[in-house]
Amino acid sequence: MDLTKQLASELGFGLEQLNRTIKLFDEGNTLPFIARYRKEVTGGLDEEQLRRLEERLTYLRNLEARKEEVIRSIEEQGKLTPELAQAIQAATVRQDVEDYYRPFRPKRRTRATKAKEQGLEPLAALIWAQELTEGDPQEVA
Image (cartoon, helix red, strand yellow):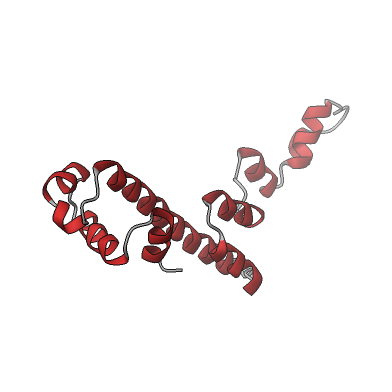
């Protein structure tokens, strides 16, 4: 669904009114300026309506950007299915997008994982157990 149409249905504003108001926000005009000096452009929206519009517009734009980022990341891993892409695109809340992404999120690299990658796990197990009775710990490493 188009962003403007979604906002129009959620907030109950006209499409042309929304397009003009969004254009004012995109040009960098502040909410108080628009509320005071651009009432004729916004169709008489008051400050509270403009604030709701700005907050929802920002949220939806961030949501769309996050959806694209998640899809790109999963696609780079080669694990994106058409069903998953469709489910992510259909999400209306950021938490849903994050829930879909969670199984594909790269794991954090801690010091322990770096040590395991370097083959130090047997040495760590030996130190943890404190059972070296003979030999050199360097040999285990």
